[in-house]
Image (tube, rainbow, N blue to C red; front, side):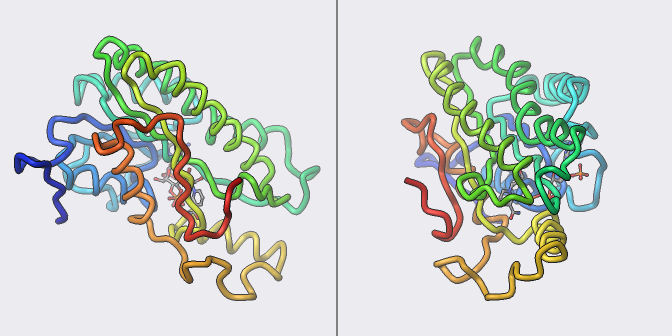
Length: 256
Ligand SMILES: NC(=O)c1ccc[n+]([C@@H]2O[C@H](COP(=O)([O-])OP(=O)(O)OC[C@H]3O[C@@H](n4cnc5c(N)ncnc54)[C@H](OP(=O)(O)O)[C@@H]3O)[C@@H](O)[C@H]2O)c1
């Protein structure tokens, strides 16, 4: 176990209460593990429990795409943790379509619910407590595909673009209340969801993935690469950072 200690020898996030969505595998599971290692109490969620949820985390089954799911989570966090100091919106993802016109209405709505409105709803339930305590940290997980907007994923990148815009605005609104809000933007990361999506894309477009890696640093990301960035942003080491977007993609998708 890696422990991150502060100057007085206690773990850096000891006493902090964290809620992470989508913590049963991939990037979310790495975030949960790193938060636990840093001493935080952690509650996480997915639509179904798996053996890959880190030992020591509280697991609650919920679907973040619905208002009812958000309410279930907020109530569970209150009951299990007594409140939330660190909120990480990680659940997300998409499957590709052969053309934008082939994306049905329900899929557009589903993408907005999963990759954008899930954060809006849960934030609205948990930020009042943070405002009262005049402290809290929120991280939204976006995607490096946003500025690239590959057509098979426009439903996904449009929802994530909305999330980035919302995250920046929320940061400005909550800064005077002592609450920091930032985005972490992963590039191509080796996770079950990421691998499945890339396989589906390669079936639609066999040219995908045939020319070796396009990542300047020479490899795909690992879930821990993204979790390290999240851990930095929720720690006091990032106490003067809000409204930022930390892109963690091996240099693949430079932003202006
Ligand atoms: N991997 C990449 O290459 C990559 C690149 C850019 C951005 N991202 C972003 O990084 C985040 C994590 O991606 P990942 O690759 O780690 O995904 P993943 O391997 O598919 O894991 C997703 C996690 O979210 C949960 N989840 C999915 N839908 C949910 C729902 N409706 N309600 C509650 N939980 C739900 C999943 O559990 P259940 O299925 O059991 O619900 C699982 O725990 C996502 O926001 C994704 O868009 C990933």
